[in-house]
Image 1: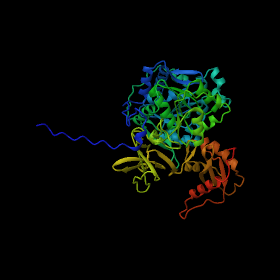
Image 2: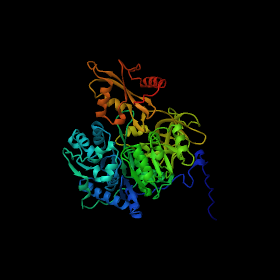
Image 3: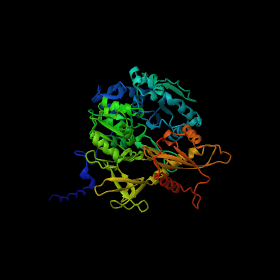
Image 4: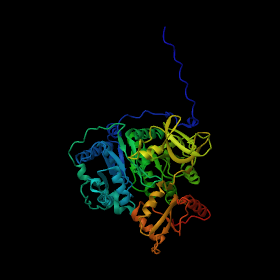
Length: 583
């Protein structure tokens, strides 16, 4: 007598958003169980002569890209970089960034992406907190990085620095085609700086090594990326991403937008940022697509390249689209090749989305994600987007809106905190078990990440952002954390107290405002003077665009600054007057 037949498990009920799921895309995927380096190696084997990178007129093909990364990996290995070592990568988008990123992975090391706008204080933290002993940058940024290294204790300083020149990636026609404002840093060969206690190697010399690269030792569970994100406590925290979390979203993102060797991607979102790094760089390399690299935003150049290179996929932030459509040359830009356009970081104004649709027939697809989640946890289905909406839970993601206090799931249309779980969620914060513990909660026996963002979900399963639970300012898609800016402001000898809030900005969405109490004896400190000082001490997007001096900051009975009261006053005051066109 045979064993009794086991009843089939009941299929889970379909989720509301599955009705709008991209056609022929599975709800969950099984990504490759390999390192991220393997994606480039496979694409180079399959498509050796296919264009991988386009930078002005220079084309780098996949076989050449892989070979350059192998050479740089060999140099790093023989300079002392070993498995698990962290390597700072501080560059704007360009061929060298792509080579360096994959070379670090090929050397079995960990990429620590650094914002090239960072100044000395921010760089010192990145060096000391990550424990990096090597870094790769461009000559226009190398001196600042070397100064930051020299300011830390000798046992924490960088030991090796590789420096590339932008001019090496350009020919005469490329330099002539660059926007005028770019030509100084693109064309100037800045001298290599000395590195106290370490060595400096020029990029071309590093790639000229004939030493062998090390064997590939890392796999899906090894640490691959350590991007930094700030929090309400001020100091940025490293987000530990193993190869598998990034691999998942790279594979899922390429499938979501039907990317492949036939695709050409305009890569203008910075690749030090998690969105540009995962949904741009890694998704494109996995799919063997072509990346058209823009170091900075320039609407006329973007319009020409969209047209010339027949771009099919363009991930951006809404302010770029706003700027492009405002160009006097907009009518000459040919966007007929574009199959997908979308982004996040800020809501796309409805009027601009409608113009994009009426003028070019393109639906703008918004999405949502965090550094901790390797970019997307939500995205609008390309065939069924909703305006000013985060979209539906991404491939493999389970999301809920919960009461921030009780953590109980809330019904549709009720506002609460968005929590997520999925294969792209990070392992935790680097050397911060306390912060890691605070970031996760248990719901029905499952571990969910707390996004810190308030939102609601509609009857179709689409998510909408309604407020910020954390004190975060969103300036053109760049996240600015007030506590970090306040900490830097306090370094000014004329600042006694400071509170940083958001001020509404018709173009950027939000900008930074500092409410400041002068220190006695510093009556000469002006708004412009303080803003000028800030530009030397912090990244440009963090610099307050408005400063207001007050005699005292409002405080609670416990002595805490009542930032929310200042924020509400700012919103109430700015909604009654038109925006300043000069900002």
